[in-house]
Length: 121
Image 1 (spheres, rainbow, N blue to C red):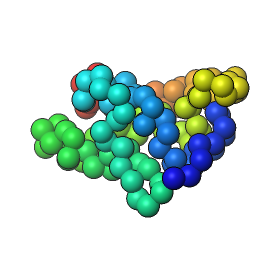
Image 2: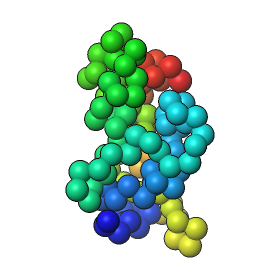
Image 3: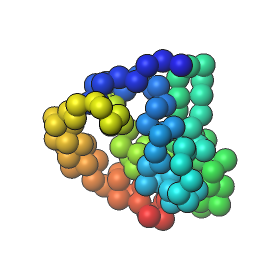
Image 4: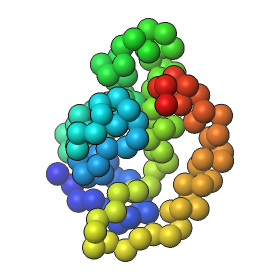
């Protein structure tokens, strides 16, 4: 397993964030259960199964909206903008990340709204 990058640093797909907490989309799909069951591994790199394999986790919605649209919606909702947003208790908070996240939300407003629609959030 690879080490987690610093909070706010570029994501290295370590999976630590999804092992520690569920994102709101994961909670919607699976309920509050701890580590995300959609965390998938390719060697020592993780990926979100809700993005890469929505047919496995939401087959009815995929039949209605299509796998590509469900994947795109999940990608927007998990906030995959390339920076580590998982913060350990003893780790300094990267305050610039908040601005990056706000910009991400602003630029992707319509795609995020579509993600809310297809994932029924």
